[in-house]
Amino acid sequence: MTLEVSDLSITRGGVPVLQGLGFALRPGHALVVRGPNGIGKTTLLRTLAGLQPPLSGRIEGADETIAYAGHSDGIKPTLTVIENLTFWARVFGARSIQPALDAFDLNDLAERHAGNLSAGQKRRLGLSRLLVTGRPIWMLDEPTVSLDVSAVAMFADAVRAHLGQGGSALIATHIDLGLDAEILDVGPFKARPREIEDFDGDFL
Figure 1: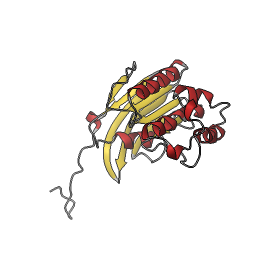
Figure 2: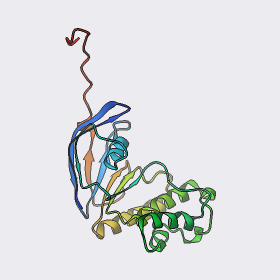
Figure 3: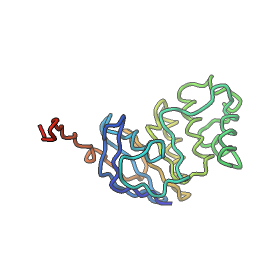
Figure 4: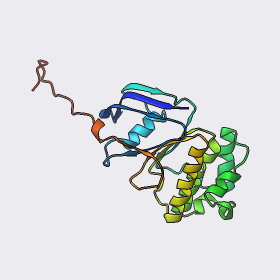
């Protein structure tokens, strides 16, 4: 499934942040989103994931294909690691959670309550949910926050495996994950300030 975006304009709090953005994300490919803090990378991913509407433009190939991982780990602290993954596996109809446990080295933590995990362990659990979604497009916003070097490598390996199976990934990150990925610099698509009009309709 190819995600195609054309002439996309998006807003944050009603204020345009990016405009005229276009790209195609094809199966087996990764696209890394780059740009200065505050330019609208998170807003872009949330819009593509269907969490907020675009101001204008077209998004094709997104329906029921995207697994989104944002800043929140999205886990239930009162459930164990296994219970968290089992919950999401049932939501998405996955047959097994074992690949997720293996990919993020969670087997030794399987019976521990998520609320008792370290920040890095919680992040690993949150990211492991991607493997039980069955969704072909992974959309990830700063996924390596709280991860140590070895956990970053686990994540990168999981993405490579996903790409190798025909999936794709759109990742907003400032670090080099060592992936064979294209770069989408959103800087050139920063929205221009709106013109200010006076009460007579003439530009000031």
